[in-house]
Length: 322
Length: 275
Image 1: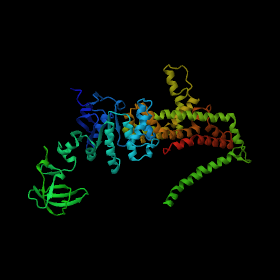
Image 2: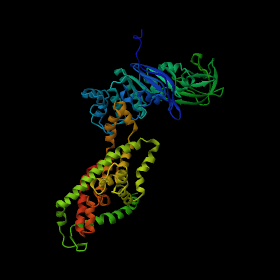
Image 3: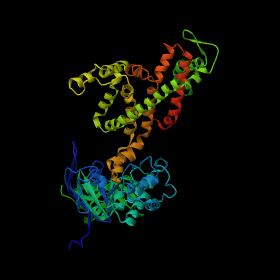
Image 4: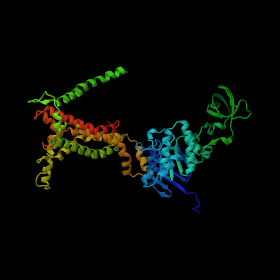
């Protein structure tokens, strides 16, 4: 019966990490299965990077257990853990060429004939022809890909990615998103991606864990956490949210009409922002609350100052215990 | 902007011209002249001062200077690298340790070298203690030999190795060592493959800063070598004082400069922006 179960590749059990001044990770439990793309999403300072560093072995948990492939690794140093990290700053060795950066881990393992593997890795990240360059001679995106190849060539149980796209410009970031996702699927290696960018997490992940103040607020597929947020924090953190009374309503769930017969509130149009594929109408409701409606399509033409009727269906209301 | 630059640099230019370029030219001129009977120089011009340098007597002195300077630099590297590494990993204590490294500069080099004299001589602290403890029966010859000179030089110039080394190690991104560990490198392998190669510019810079004053040292060999360990500096000093042979002293000085430049120019190029 146990054999048929999906193999848990990493398990965190009630992990706590205290620093002298504060508790960075507060009793989190998490199970990652092989071959999937996970994201750890949260604002800066929520403990997500510390969690990653605990898994990599750069920090030791104050209490709790970390299990890699079923073995407790709390006291195993990073150089003996079969996980690999892509650092936010890339942390490429500046004195080594692309090729030698990628070969570094294989050499440390004592492998003898690794030139084939290195070449393959260079090809995978499309850096053929740049293998003799030094990191300083590469663009940001290229450095990113070297860091990725350097880790992937070791075929780790888990690849940890610490905000790897944060230093890239928007266009490159979007390209790399698709590329990372494709690479995860091609290699079948479990990715754990740390980010503060909800769009990134939603776009790439099979599963997202949302962290807040050292705790995991919710885990689930992108659709689950977006549509059925478990807590008020998650609801507000993921995507935009209107708080009307004690209910949350997504902007795209709000409907506006000039004279609808059925409506929940009247509102004054404060501003209408044309975004190309959508229009954001900023409203002041009769209760005095502000709300944003996201409209798509031709009906979306409202002028500032106009009085409108606002409606939404009860199914779109999200309620949370205070 | 250009004008400002010119005037800001003017004092340094004047200073260097008056107190570096001009004296150097005088030394070059002296080295080509004949010695005067009571010091000073006289006509005619000659190359004899330079041919004399190839006399085995002087060759031995230059060679000894070279060997002692190289060994002293090597010891400074061996001692300085772990020190610099330790300081760079000392967190909030860094500044305290850096101040301790530079603390000896608060008193004069002469006084500090004399202090070694009192420590090392036959009736000095070390020998007195060793005899009282019954470890040795007669005083150990700690003074007036190559070892004493070497000790004095390493002691005196170690800070010049530690400081540039510290600067390069400190500049290293801490994530590089984490990356090395992450890729399977044990601490020692990370040190050898990452820290050491990245500290090379600092090693070159420190070596240049230690080697040059060691080559020209005269106070340390004079006091701790007691005239037995004659180095190039002592030879030069001697020519300008007792021997009253200014032209030959000038020639030795130029030779010393030439050796330094020949050995160190490639190193200075590799020390990047540390020097």
